[in-house]
Image (cartoon, rainbow over all chains, first blue to last red; front, top):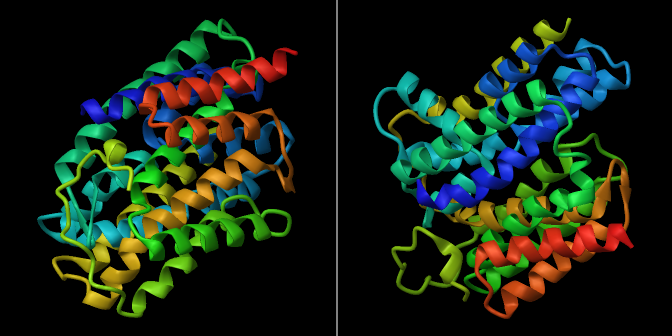
Amino acid sequence: MKAGVPYAIAGSALSISFGVLAREAGFSAVAAIVMSAIVFAGSAQFTVVSIIAAGGGFGAAVSAAALMNSRFLPMGIALGPSLAGGRWSRAAQGQTVVDASWAMANQGEGRFDRWFLFGATSVQYVSWVGGTVIGALGGSVIGDPDRLGLDAVYPAFFLALLVSELRDRRSRGVALAGSVIALALVPIAPAGVPVLAASAAAIIGLRPGPEPAAVLPVTDGAEDGR
Amino acid sequence: MIWEIIAACALVTALIKGIGPFALGGRDLSPRVIGVVTLLAPALLAALVVTQALADGEQVGIGEDTAGVAAAGVALWRGASIMVTVAVAAGVTAGLRAI
């Protein structure tokens, strides 16, 4: 759970601004809080609110949310074999996937530490919903989140997680290819698609690679710089 | 309509997150698929970093947040902890916007 704390702190700041923006878009406070509690996916929630604020309808909002969350599909497939229990139980455990927890629970070689995932996500869930309550009820105490530089917080976190993943030449190449694919698609594809499409860069993994060096039992990649 | 949208988003998200583990059941992935899965993290994380730091809607461009994330990269390279890295990112971005 401890590993999830920095993300939970950042998440609470972002979810406060979500609560504020949702109210401005015409959500009731209860609707904003319920959305955070049952959708629990920051980028999708912000996308939906901005679409509703711009006068978009049901189809536009829901399909944008689906595309925004589509990256969880390959993440769920990767996680699947590390879960336990029956199919429905596994599907339920799969709900705990959020970007940072998934990346940190990744032990390499296709294995994930599921208890690590559950713990890291649980603190983020509490802070996400709690922040939304503050934002939706307390109004704009925090002011404009962009003015505080909060929009740079998540990419900085993801950058730190990425650095710990760049173990060898191959993963560096895949990261570069994934970035190029995503950036190339930004101007032409709907939001969410560029990140999903970047997972195609991982297909190079079908080719047997160099034998990986002894796998370290890394759970928190922060110190594993190489 | 807001409630219908919320319900549909919750359903779609749960489906997307649950379908992989549901479909796989207790099966293991083949070694070749594991090769792909191992590389998903760098591909997806890199895409999240560049799209969040460089894209604004459908436009790719450099903004204050790009500079903040770049500064975070330098901090990481200098061996900064994750919290320092994130503070640098937010601080540089907010500082540039304040000017």
